[in-house]
Amino acid sequence: MKPIEECKARASRLKLMVFDVDGVLTDCSLYFTDAGTEIKAFNARDGHGMSMLQKAGVTLAIITGRDAECVNWRMKNLGIKHVYQGIGHKLSTFHELLAKVGVEAHEAGFMGDDVIDLQVMGACGFSAAPADCHDLNRLHADYIAGKPGGHGAVREVCEFILAAQGKLDAALAPYLPSPPTSR
Image: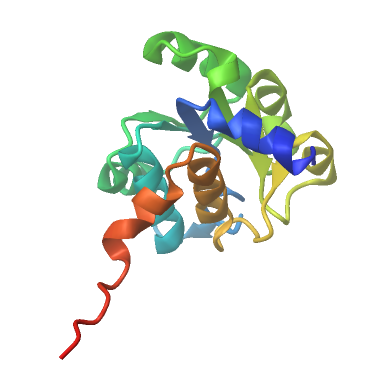
C-alpha cells in the first residue's frame, strides 16, 4: 500500500471506478441452485457506497471473469451501465472501456482481489483491494481496505474516493439527522 497522501491524490483524479465482482462485491463464495443457476450475495452497504460515488459524478463499471445473470440484475438495480462479464483478459476490456467513456487511464481506478486483476490494477491511476485479497494484490494495490470482500470493502473504498475528492460530506449530508428544534 502506498502512503495515504499519495493514495488520496490518485483517488482525487478519478472519473471512472471499475470493480471486480467475486471477492470484491461478494465474499468469493460461489452458490449454485440444483438447476445450475449461479447466485451471489451482495452487500447492501457496498451498493449504497457505489450509488453515492455515482451520484457524485464518478462513472462506475464492472469487469469480471465469471458470467452470472444475478450480476446483471444487481448492476441494473444500481444503475451501472458498463457491465463486462466472462472476461478472461481484463486489461484489453479495461482499455476498451476507457475509450468508450472517454477517460484516460490515470483518471480510472480498479478494485480487484486476485491475480487475474493485477494487470488492470497496474494500468490504472488508482488501485484498491479488499483486506482478504491475494498477497500479490496486496503488494500492487494503492489502497487496501480494512474489510474483506463482500463485507464492506467496496463501501470503504467508495467513501475513501469521495473524501479524496472533497465530496464525502455532501454525499452523507442527506442522511444526517436534522438538529433538534428548541422548544
